[in-house]
Image (cartoon, rainbow, N blue to C red):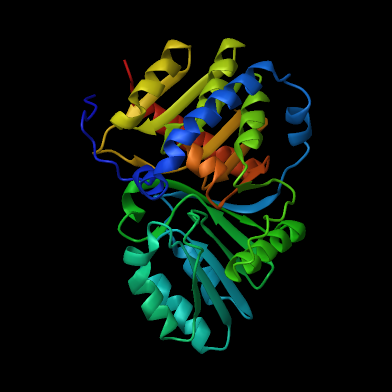
Length: 352
């Protein structure tokens, strides 16, 4: 297989660092310190504590196979409220579903990123929704709001890795889950309301919810908990802490597979991972684009633990952005991620 040497960046790293250029250089220093801490931290402690925090998801969707009809259906069946936080919104069908519910009396609130993506690309959606009874707010421009989630009737939360950009639906690997755990939904709803009101308060914790800023240790601990196998998909590989955790897993005998779409920005990091025993496969720009952010720990027929969320493996995403993911051992989520990552790995090619 040929790997495109100059594949364009379809993803979000450029957006993150173009807005926060200082973060790139600061991230190096933070990453070095994080590496030192990871190297001396025992595998018990935080990792053991993290293992007791899981969420139960009721449904999972793998894209592009399943499409986004499930979200349209959820919006259509809302009776009281819809709250959405989104990085990119460019789907006219979804926008008109939101408008229809607002006109029917449902309270619809939409929070859109303004730090990089929003003020130009999200502007048409903002103008349309504001003219149609939807309550729309720009997220604070001082922080990238990269989370992708919806809360329906304060009883069901849909958490995903994908943006609502219809031009990407047919060609992009993403995952979505539905979380109905009352404590999780309350935590997400409370965090959304604070963010919508620009309160600047920390996100609410619950179950297996993984919020950024501050998600690095949770994901490092999750990787450190692997004992047999580790499957990883991400759009970016620019976090020394995550990379060191993957290397440490491979060196203690875990079979580590990493699948990404090739980009020269991550080449050096991926080559180093391969040299340390991590099995890296990349897809080229003409294949399925890996936009998913997923970790599958000890995923086998008998079970496992997965992370699905909006966090990219970058300093900006883990330490500065507003992000949301979930850790769960629900079998249908484990099976979905395990099947997709193994399938993508099978059609990818080694870095070297």
